[in-house]
Length: 145
Image: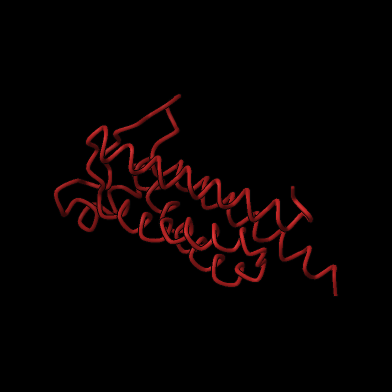
């Protein structure tokens, strides 16, 4: 089924992106959780990954990593910032003017499993997993040369 490790990693990254996309749609469209401004930016960076990684997997195009890595790194940085302002009081106080604007505050915590798993944390994990898969693909491609 999977000819090489890079195919497996493309499939893995695609599944992660699909789960993250479907999860965010479930939370907002089915459960009615309105996304904050930072959540929207994370979505803007995650949703295209679903399409790009799906096409790359079915075409066997491991070169897609060049396009996936920047989107994933930027999305991961936004997620890390979002987790930081949700979890660290000093960061929340410093960021309050920029994150409290809009209909939903970026500090809003709709989901809190085990006291630390929040929606931005889940997005961060998804971006990290996709980045890791792209790094594995990059190393595989380097070994070929």
